[in-house]
Length: 517
Image 1 (cartoon, rainbow, N blue to C red):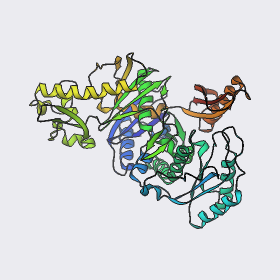
Image 2 (cartoon, rainbow, N blue to C red):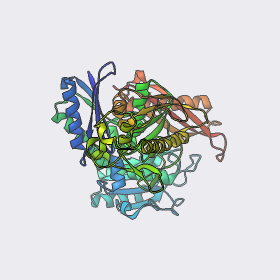
Image 3 (cartoon, rainbow, N blue to C red):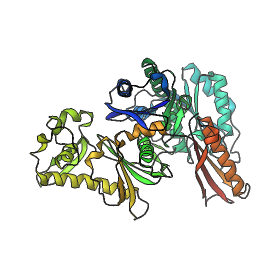
Image 4 (cartoon, one colour):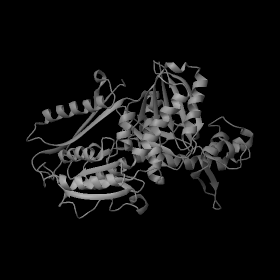
């Protein structure tokens, strides 16, 4: 049986076929198209043609896509939603979406703040006002709304009121209504957690579209025996059903796929990954085989959120980055790029724009296109350009490090040909042979995870007992997401004391991962 991995980037759509021994049987790159699906279809067709594999032998298909990110940034395809906050009277001072851009605020058909919520220690602020919530849901039903975001004060401590509201919503609006509850999506901090939940609710149309579209594309190509999975942004996979419930978890899955692919290809469990594409370069960190998670709030399309996101730096440097010489003799690279038009516009391909790829060919770092077409570039100019782009990457490597010590570095991505094999701050530099499609490989070989987070007072529940319970919960969440129970292992445990809470309160976070069913 084979695994098919696909990753949709801004410039290219990559596809790989992996055999039972997790070896790459075939890999291709196709230009990403405006409608995305044409590019996916082209990539699937190309990799099937190259491999000659019997379509019935493909048992799993994985997709990493930028659809959700694009929908938020471009304000396209977002669903009309209702927003219910449980926390009156305590949280009335700051309404939902208070600092959102007006064009994005338009997704909210109606908003309500009803009685309920909890204190930091789990004590009830006020009883849940089920009557007011029912009236709100009835109004949304009349307006034809099909997706609801529910948030509650301190629901990460106790989510009783959110669950009660979700149950009531389905009773009033029908079993087919989509309900996103904040305790399943975000972390501590009501506003940021609520924001992430609102975005998740607004993405349900997009999620249905790309999951059904991917399934349809595979069926059209005769791949009918494959179980379908989507990449999520912690470097693991989720089922189609899970992706439809939590589409926001696909945001930033591209860089994490590359990190997982780099980890697999290099066999390094701890390193900095530099993924160079056609337009941008993403830098991330592998910790124990998985992407390091960001510890700060993340802004998506102008909206501040606090759900889990990879710790990634993106810079405007890629194989298609435009190189310019200024009047004062300075040479700059990017941040603008010819992107997927590189095969038409770059000098080595007969175009008229000098790109980072042209510099790499001129200096002998890469061998593609027609070398003669860059022979006129002076070596001094080319060296200045290489120095400029190298400095950009080296500065970013320093930003990702947590100490002054040199680190192991892995270069992947189709654009990695533009970088030298010696970089300041790097102890070793690995350039895997199949690194050009590391993102698709990462998608194909990823595991399935479960994440658990809760505030625990160790004076009430002893630390050892609390951690064991958290590990069991995380393992169950991984199984629910599609992992084989026997293969699930705990890959990260964190408990952080919270000084401003009474007693010995700690934030406990556990992550578990296992192989696909």
